[in-house]
Length: 212
Ligand code: B1M
Image 1 (tube, rainbow, N blue to C red):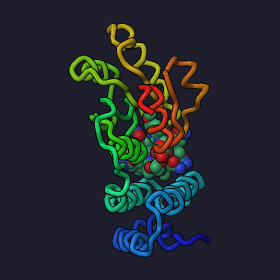
Image 2: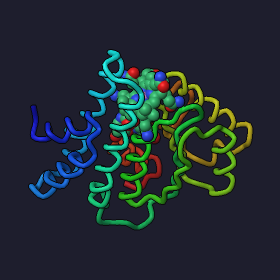
Image 3: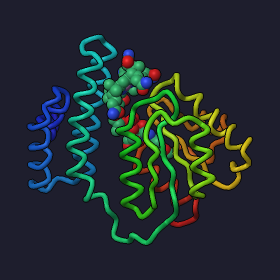
Image 4: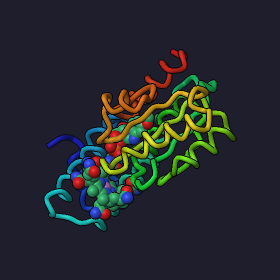
């Protein structure tokens, strides 16, 4: 039981009103946004995933919890803004083809945006050719890909191959992440970097661009 137990329970139940009120209460009580996120919201989504795996809940309940978390994140978003907001580089981000999970991707985009990167978010279920088209159009410094399903991870590899074919692979850095993704997988598919969470996505992006 931690200080965000009531918040976590509200997210698990998909009770938006209580969850938003608990998030506000935690902020008013002086809790840090990062602790609320990690110990309250993300911990709750892990529990939701466990309950789904055990057959205790089904997709509609997962969806409701996701919506609840997203509403709470709206309150936290302004607090992830870093002081120095001079542009650190252009980032293109999206969840790969076949995958509809966007909470982690949104969190990565939110934190990178807060740290001064210009973010273009392509959304979810993004096919390789769409990534390529947007790279040609926007000339980003970094392309971030998210996947939450082991079945959609190969879309990351296919996107890198499509970038190679189109002659744009060497023009951008590629960073990948998402729950089933690993450092080893990033090396296998020749991505430039892997980030396990949104905070490290920011520091890895800064490293990639030498903007530390
Ligand atoms: Co889905 N789902 N889901 N789901 N879902 C998981 C991922 C699962 C692990 C649940 C489980 O079985 N325990 C499982 C995947 C198993 C696997 O393949 N390994 C699963 C499944 C099976 C499915 C469906 C197939 C279920 C079905 O229909 N039968 C289906 C697939 C739909 C599809 O995508 N085609 C499905 C659907 C859904 C919902 C739509 C209902 C909903 C998503 C709603 C939404 O995103 N708007 C949903 C949810 C909510 C989950 C869980 C419960 C929570 C995901 C989440 O938002 N976590 C999830 C279980 C879990 O993860 N514990 C589960 C919170 C979020 C902050 O964490 O996204 O991991 P995460 O992001 C992290 C890091 O991974 C990293 O940073 C973030 C934190 O700082 N990160 C990056 C993420 N992207 C990054 C990109 C980067 C860097 C870091 O770029 C550089």
